[in-house]
Image 1 (cartoon, one colour):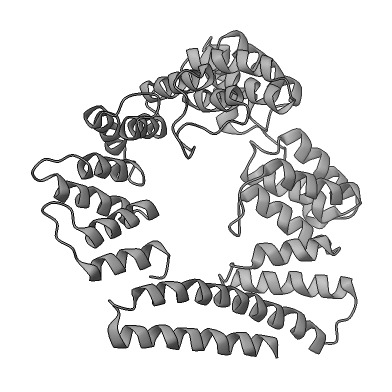
Image 2 (cartoon, rainbow, N blue to C red; image 1 turned 90 degrees about the vertical axis):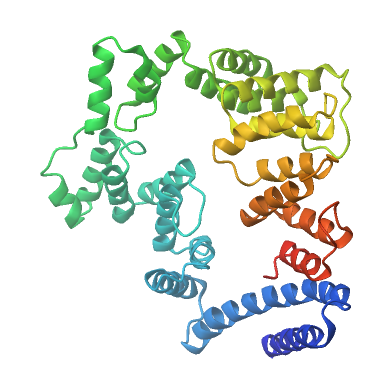
Length: 419
């Protein structure tokens, strides 16, 4: 009966909140705010219990007892929900079924990682590894799944692997594999075009060839080395990450600095993280960084470089530095220069909020209205800090903007995710 009690508590909390709105919302905003956390917690509990009841209790009523039976039924329920476009819990149900021995669920979860389905982040290496484990264990379906992935994403599974796995599936009598073997496994047109460009002397395509899945591993490695020799920024950035992940930070810094010099904005961020070695980024830390700290000086230099290379995130970082006085003196005009560039590139989450701050704290006619205008743009994009900025303005008033308790309450509640 636990789920019923949770439901009752949730309904009661909703009713108490509605009662506040019906009486005097303005005077009772603090009480409503306190109830919000309770309601959200109860909603989460209710959702979890409803899923558990529908799945596990449903399986028990169906007479399923063994772990394997429940795992298979969990997989089938997940697929039923996926077909109905109700994918909220599909990924977790597939993982649960896979962890409890359902091969079909493991293959589907691995496929979903490769294709980034069901709300999962793409993780090709992990997805293919899961499928490979079942293929090595004798699953013909797992073998043939490599063929399917090759068809849709040849950059992840090349023709050699696809052919090998198709032959293995065919040897186990897999009908689709037997039919597929009658057709050649050809290189994709995109890869062939890149190879033709490389043969004509176009060295800029070396790195692109190094990540094509329909080339052999030896060929991919050859083109990666050629890209490094040519000073390709993308290849140097990848090499820097490989060395960093292997624990060789000194060698990683060397390659990442080369990538920075050759125009990689991404390398600026990665190199900065290695240099700080666990220190908070000056644009994430709670206080002002030491301007004399060489690590923070280097980070600021790298952020400037990334901004020069056109990275809108770095433009926001430098703009924020001038707004808050991080590594430089406060300069709202200089801040707007960088932030406006990010805004013009389409950045709508952070840049308008920071532009709003430059107007909020500038005592000049019309700047309060400008602050509200830019805060509203950022709030519309989902920036919680912008919502709270609007709440503050309407709670206290700002120059030509009068107090407005109703709007202040609205933005406070919006910031907490109720609306």
